[in-house]
Image (cartoon, rainbow, N blue to C red):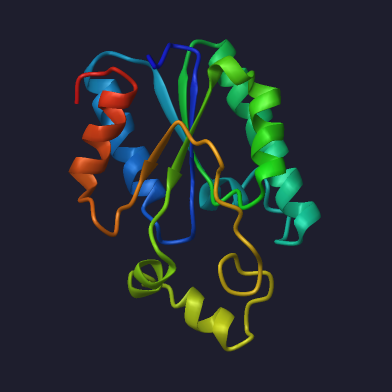
Length: 176
């Protein structure tokens, strides 16, 4: 699969899986090749465009819908988009693919085990969720539906960041 100028690479996985780190590193590699690229990160969008949304299933759906619409517009403007979102629902990811266009949607599952994500949790979100202080927390009190047919799966519990980005670049047929 070759990533084109009008594609969205959608990184999905649990909080702490490494989605943002992979997205930023991949963006840097693409920029070094002269590609126009941007990163859409779940945390960043929730501080701006999606700040009015919570974490109920309906709000999560709307978060993904808005993000997919932004990605589609950016793809149309000639940018490669790298989206880093937990996006726990298969149906919501399918909706994002439909909005963006399935030919331009590349789903990558960052499949890092929950225990590894919890070890990496510098914000203490998993501990708060387990203590009942955060409701609807994916992987603890809310479900995560792993992709059934992701274009690529990366386990950052066993792969270093550099190796994850190299594998992703190879999959997208890009120079690392």
